[in-house]
Length: 320
Image (cartoon, rainbow, N blue to C red; front, side, top):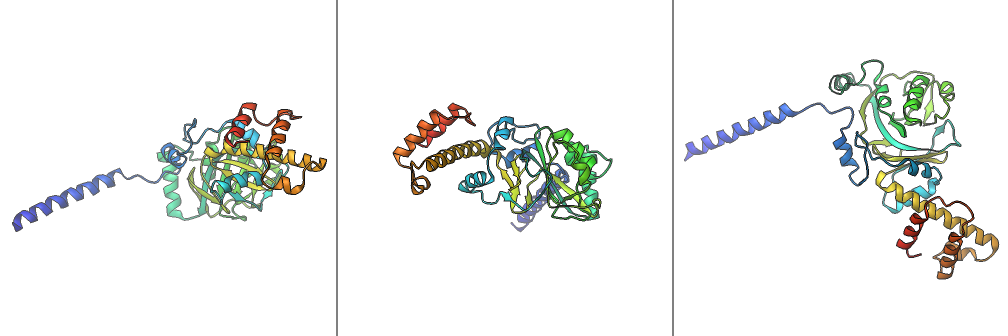
């Protein structure tokens, strides 16, 4: 009996060792760039079309409409959905009067550690086919496409933490027709300002070049100040701050904010006319005010920001 037990234990041990060896043989280094499968999992609530890298393909028309949404309106919709950590303020902005929207590509930087940097370079160049020329801070730029916004966590480093200069800035704009959002700094700001259409939200600028820091990942979750950012998020950047929006919520957010804007326009008009008291407009609307609002919408003096079908469906769902 004892002999049988020993033999059974030996067989189990050999099987376990074999399993461990098999699993170890399958282990590979962590990718510098996230796989499409990983991005699909991160953004699993998105049901629409995707880019080859897995990021949600939010439409250009929604990105354009988003520019007209205020930071407060976007923040309010997200907060009501339970997303309370998607805003970051306190920026230096190159073109503060110009809004920027786009689909997020993320990058994470950390203080330099030589053994990890070697692994990152080996993985990026040998396994993933990234460029061996120049610094790894060019790698996120190489994958940008039209409509992307390059968002990077440079852990707030200013001196020796400049993630781009005007050369990389030109490459960014050529690929994405957008700009950058950096929890970090840039150099050559005078040259960057000459790139027509390029914009940047950053924590500072400095004439130094990037030193003692390294790229660790592309298109993984990152932190930008108070906000958690995923690849494929949609960003709304204005002089009043930056909001990162989950892709699956952006269309609803735009439409909800547009209707809120119309409600505000109607309310302000009626207050100026003296038709209603402030307390009537600021509280739950009566059926009389709702009907007045719907009549006003049917005779709206300008161009509605959404289609009539979108508006009708939205109002029907909310029993206006």
